[in-house]
Image 1 (tube, each protein chain N blue to C red):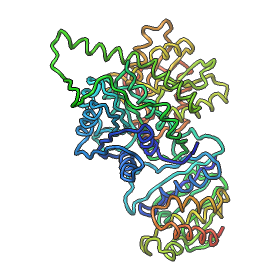
Image 2 (image 1 turned 135 degrees about the horizontal axis):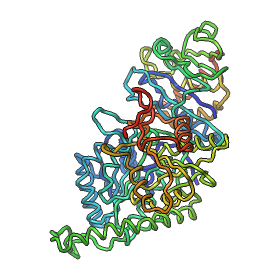
Image 3 (image 1 turned 180 degrees about the vertical axis):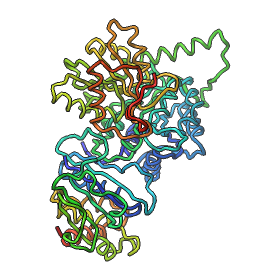
Image 4 (image 1 turned 90 degrees about the vertical axis):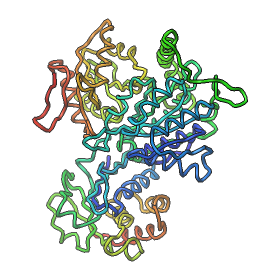
Length: 394
Length: 182
């Protein structure tokens, strides 16, 4: 299979191309711009057969994807930060309509103050919209996950949209080797979208009716059920991918050197890639530490988290965003899942890398030392603040 | 792992150079990673870019703080940027300069190489005398001075990835390969 060096944004675009997305509607925003530039080139050159719709905003981009998907077309878009925030209303519309749209989101910090660097506030703020959320750690995973996400989303038991996240610059603008699978193999893996219901002039149906209180709740329950059921499908699709293409991305939670670990960190995105180096360095010193990478945040993999809690005495949860008022979202969800667990280890939240601040392995090693010691007081710590070193908020 | 840090000014092609170098090493079946220091690259402003080359997959995604090589595309940057910061003992600085390596004063403990990449670039019609695009020339010089990547791999990557003037860029790399002093 051909390997090439490409950016995460090119990998995102090739993922959409290989998935044969039939409609692309997107609006450019740093650091997503090169995704849509690449797609525009591929469509203009005839390499990709797709309807490329130019729109005047991200809200319209998602509206166009919703309309396209409702007619049974496979729809794709990509955005970042403020673009995602502007889509908010349409995100809920897409999920409520049970449309399997796939969207790349290049995680970027929200302004003010202005920033174009990596931070998860944009996608964490969309946690409750009914979209599945995948966080990638390398460009290969970006390409593979776009294709996997369609397969999960279009499953008739699921029918929910999915976001495929890339860290701004750490993936979006980073060149590295990516294996581009042959179109034929992807076609075998991902057949054309077969919608159970669609807008069709020859067979008219009505969508988006007003639903009174005696039925609305059931619509919401069905989304909740589909999101629960997606756990199994995400796992199965990743396993099927591994059988066909020889690589797995870990399903919902990827474990690294967790065997006989006393302490673990939970992290997502590119910081979990760097954290492997930190774990290796600590293991070289005989310290029993491991890493659990949160590949999927929605649905939240509470069973996998509870399993980790059975195995270790202490967990540090690393968040690249903060939910003002109490803790980072990865932490509060982890702690919430553990309350119902039979074993509850020491758990602490480390807020790190906000606004794209670089995370070298030695910083993660510092956190691992503290997690291992279990003597680290407090519940939430902002790691490496410039003001006076580390500070706790509570 | 070999770590290379580029210092240039916006418009000189530092980020493209870091990518072309990664692609060249990839042709030699190495694992690579290249990325810009996440600045908002404006024309003329100092720009930093990184290339990592290894025999195994590269998981560390943090910035390069202890480079084996530093490549400076614009000698005037030496006055405003600490280009040798963190450079490893016996590492190398490759400078775009008319001067000989022994006439460059940057400190002790590392090797210095020089090439007049501006002259080479202008001779091949790459940019103007005031705004030369020196990235292909400096990469050719790097190939010879470092021995880390073959000039043939670089040539192939330049022909594939240069945004324009592919042959001129490849020729500039070959000429600088011959002219670099170290």
